[in-house]
Length: 294
Image 1 (cartoon, rainbow, N blue to C red):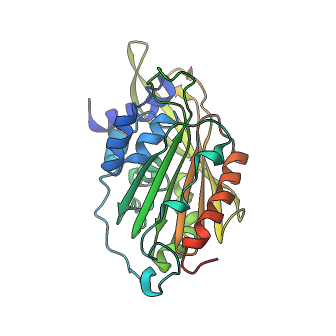
Image 2 (image 1 turned 90 degrees about the horizontal axis):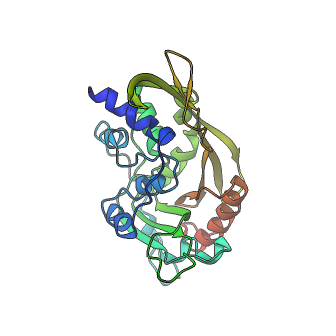
Image 3 (image 1 turned 135 degrees about the vertical axis):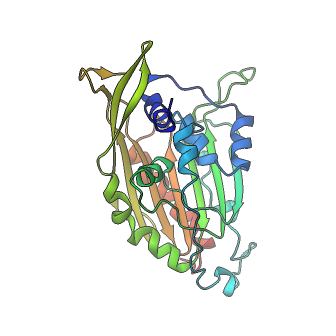
């Protein structure tokens, strides 16, 4: 099968199959390889092909050209227990913010990470030969919160409740993340992905339509947007027959406070109202560590 055929199979796989929950060790391992967001996306049943060809290929976009670093965030010291450069653990969402029993949060830190909004959005742009790279950060810290299992003897991973990445960026980067949002989404407001795929033992031609929309803004921090990603039910292009089930939209909040940018998602049982509420909490946590401070 050609590479582009495999890519489409991976794109529609989420529509046609059930999700395998990653083990905690697997999540941690992927986090250390700087692909934690992809692993969580799989756990959320939004993109069940997090380790598949589509996202792997998306990660191999054109080499990233260094952008202006701007004025160092550490130029003015802060009167706190951490430096202005690092992203302190105190900025992260906590299990108590989820109002349910949770397991031990999975955390990670990074240096020079890309400010990742949505890997499939990046692939949408790359497939259209458009600029497909994220803005750079200086430092980052991440957390994934999972639901606690009722039985202590049950060692299976709990359901993902929320995930958050917090990035410390240069001033010009913070401006570009939000100022360029409309231009970033424009080519992917109705993106049709079509090609051969396996369905009930046969190879057929199928299609799904992806759409990214900015559905709200200004609800938290200095700047904030709520992004919603929807995927249509897969369709047989020869017969018009629908394939698989219609899945829930995936939403995420992007919030800025000073030089800190946070990207937040909730689990499959979470709502956009929950996401807005967590974004407000996150903005408050970021205030003492932001430069300038709130």
